[in-house]
Length: 260
Image (cartoon, rainbow, N blue to C red; front, side, top):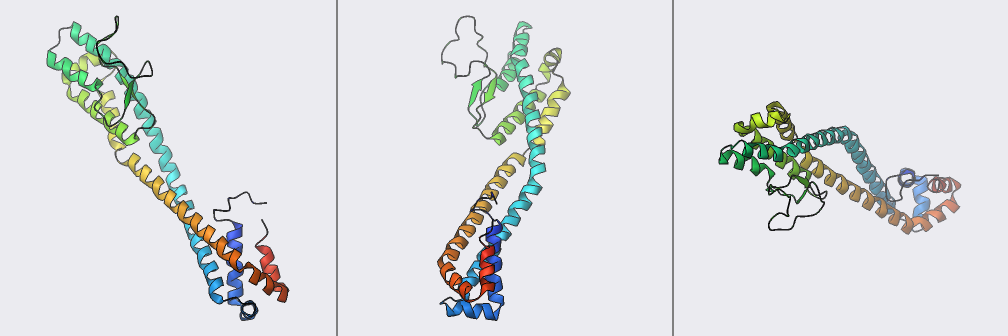
């Protein structure tokens, strides 16, 4: 017994299409159906809807096959990028402290602090605590440095990617902070690697979203076609049943549409 959804292309859709087509192709079968009050157009519509549903099903299957591997690769690269970014961002506040203690120029300290500021299109929360900090002065014992950030789950992956690319680009440009970063195991090449990965993913995440939207559209179209064919079949089924009583060969065709 089939477990496929009645709203998707399945053996029932194929059987209704095949039965209507066979009756249409046989002048004898068609004449019997017409004698019961049926019209050829009834069957033509069943066939048309079934073939269109099959085409949508093939498009859906092909898109899933082609997109699956690519999507997995993009997701793996995205997770790698985020993981490396978080490691680097965990070091940045300590580097700011190092620079201040070394009496680094104000513009150098200001430049690296910009990386910690929330300027992205996403809603960001501190890494620790799980909630937005209260505005105003820091509590006793807290640093006045901007907190490292994490993205809220609902935010756009493309926005996260763009923010990572921007932050790494800024750190690469700040040559004066490279020695301090290297002291804490964040070498320039590491920054370049993360930046390159973010750059390579540009467009792929939004394309994936668009592809998902297109797939949903195909699914809706498929379900609509299947549902319409079922309705049309139900409308003429009594006439087909009468034709089946008049000719056991037609009855046998109808029986195949009830098998699951």
